[in-house]
Image (cartoon, rainbow, N blue to C red; front, top):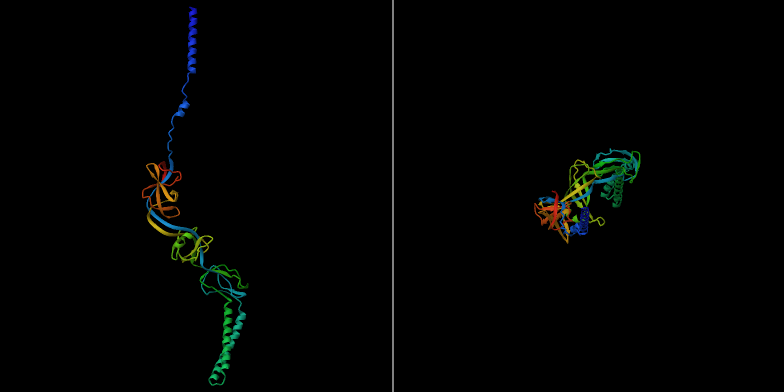
Length: 357
């Protein structure tokens, strides 16, 4: 009995080992290989973009440049002759009128000469009168009469010359304006090169600026403009009164000047200005951001949004402002255009709209 039991155990063990060996060495399916053999489907990845719904609005064609305010007239005041300053009549920073006496240098010698010459006038005039009476009676020659007439004329000329020299000792305002800070004092010696003060006319003011040469033909006398100044919220209006006769060869710009009335003198020359020149206004214009246009082969295209995808549309453009471009043909109101990622877009590419303006 024990013998049969022993052989039975051996048979069971042998069968078990055989089964294990068969399982171990039987080829199994490679899961990684199977995964690599599954065909991969390439899904189109959607691009996140911004969009804008087109709505007709006012479009203004304008030129934006920088300029400065300069006085209508300005001059450094100085005497026409040399001498000691004996009086200064103006107060610094005040308004003076044309012809107003501002300062004077010593003219005592000239005044003495003038008195001496004027004292000779009665005698010279009497000689001419007497010589004329004698000439009427043929008592003197015509040459004698002409001689005394010449002496009288010379005396008159000398008097006028002295008066002119006296006038040169007076410093007068050549035009209405505001006189600045004086640079001399009473008692100082002045010459024609000595600056006494600066006189400035600030009503009106000139606005000086330059525009690129491509706009030169659009800027004419009478062109209106507005300008702003730092620290002031309101706009100021001026009008072009003159342009330079030629384009600057170095800067390729045209120099322009406009007039601002400055009636109450609130603005002072020397300030910089941000200038805006409006060229043309279009009501109900279809305009798009400049960055949404994609130039291609000499044409312009814009991507529009349709059913979740991007599609290119060829457009014809009109005027161009600093931020927008007018579309004349190719788009209509309520179209949705894509304004970002334009260089990555392709026909029919799925897109996701992040922001819609």
